[in-house]
Image (cartoon, rainbow, N blue to C red; front, side, top):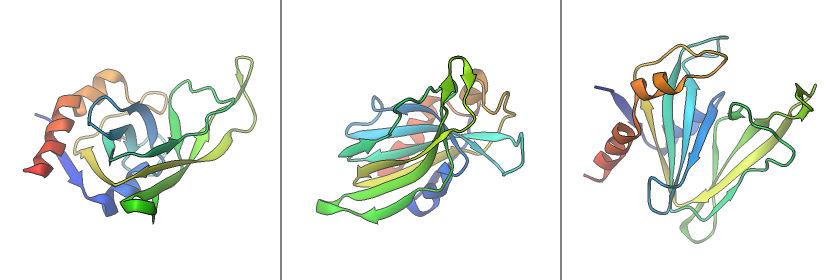
Length: 162
């Protein structure tokens, strides 16, 4: 059975550093947004990766500037999430992201660095304790689900409410 660590906001903010957003999900938690991530266990090239979720609760605004970007294998995040108080009980979460640009079918020399911003009431993180070896800098669908299924991630988060 897959094992997880549930992370409070202060620890979950660091999950985005050098992580890849595999999916952006709003179908899992009412009024919530889930960033489904591949997270490296270290900064070494080819380091094993874990599956993680960052769950934003009570989402009010999402800004992910992807103009002219093509996303063949996700959005690469390059910094930890920063957090700042916002209006009416919301908090502003932001980090830097790398959006690959292409000229035709060839990757352009420079990738677009831009900021991502989410305004929500709170966030929590869940990360698999096991890791898998990436192929081409990412985990395969099969490995991601072996590390942790959507259902087991949801169950881990549900346990917070109990």
